[in-house]
Length: 397
Image (cartoon, rainbow, N blue to C red; front, top):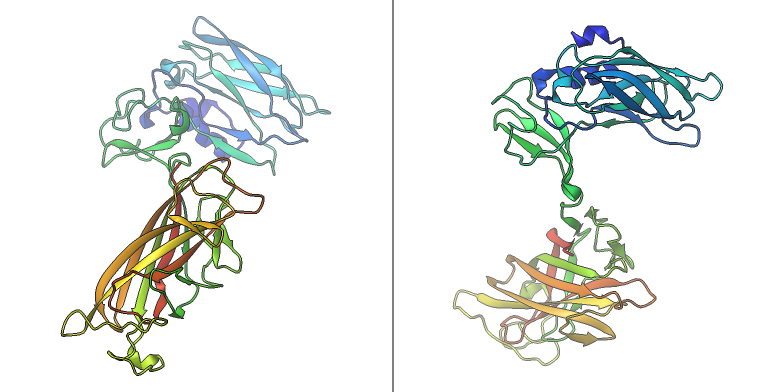
């Protein structure tokens, strides 16, 4: 068996040898590329060596050093990968050893100890640094999976193969979709790992505290949620952070489109919790005009109509509802029928777009304000509850 032939210097190298030679896990591809190996990060004190194989009659007859690199303290392990599908069979893999210069740590030569057989194309030559303390990363076998449902080609895995369960490869030839993928035996298919290019870019800001007694005006500018409202975002969206005393959300100076979702959990304040103005229907009156309205049903239900304004500072919106206090804004409306003192939730969705020329010298940021729709039947302030309230920003292009 191949594993008995190769005397590798570490447990990791033994694992890699198994990946390279074992047919039982399905690495018998028609068009294999680089095989699994440990790759060393480049630094000023170290550069990995490179080499090219020479084959004749299906055997490895030589390895030419293209760049000896430098910084090896001990001779690296030579890993010979690829070379055609039949070269993965037991007993077919070649074996080679490297020689280094004791002063520079450069690879000066590679000796072929066993030329193997059945090589169809030139195999890849990789050097594994065995020195302690060297930072390493795993290079997975490159396989061009045409479909995540295809377990026949280029990797042949028998249905529900126990040995193949969890087999990990790098899905090559897919451009931005080239991500690690693994085989799952129960479903008899491949699954992709998380794709950084495809994954939605989102920042979610939860609330630090309740915003109590928020006065919201009818068709006006709306009430500000004020300072210290947002927690640090849970985010994979670079440059989108809380700002200005945690009352606003800063955006990067990058052209593009964002979807902003504002979800608020509210409760209306009972009449007994606000100063009495001795007006009809208790205190349910407009705070400035004095206009009052009754419940819309005999059992005390009110029409709680709201609008939400999303303001954009230091950046002009491509599409907007209007401009207020020097800031472009978008307005959306939401409503609910509920009783005084009962919790209710609102969701506002805004699509904001910036052109490359939209930005001023200062950093752009957005701010949300809440107001009352015209024609609603309730005027008193509300409490914005931290629990269940959040603002989500998603970059969509």
